[in-house]
Length: 93
Image 1 (cartoon, rainbow, N blue to C red):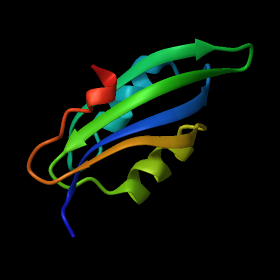
Image 2 (image 1 turned 90 degrees about the vertical axis):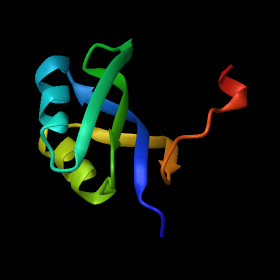
Image 3 (image 1 turned 60 degrees about the vertical axis):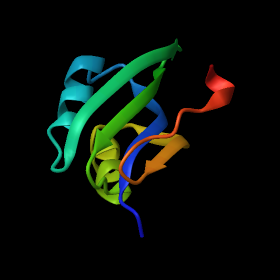
Image 4 (image 1 turned 90 degrees about the horizontal axis):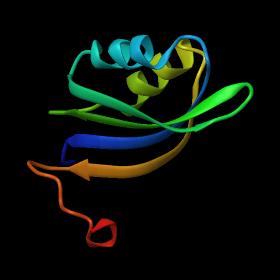
């Protein structure tokens, strides 16, 4: 099976921890070369983030475990890239 090199996740998280420490913790995981979190929506109790993670061989289970340890949850997996490069999505322009 080709390694997973990019994940784009829809994540629901409480306001604490903040977006900066949340993303930094994900970026510190083994095998992750880059992590980006974009705030999509702010509700009274939670924030919705679009989290993009890149690396040479990402392990979804360890990423999900870390997100849950930070009191957040993966709402959906919105994009997965496998192989040596990511393919541009023509629907995204």
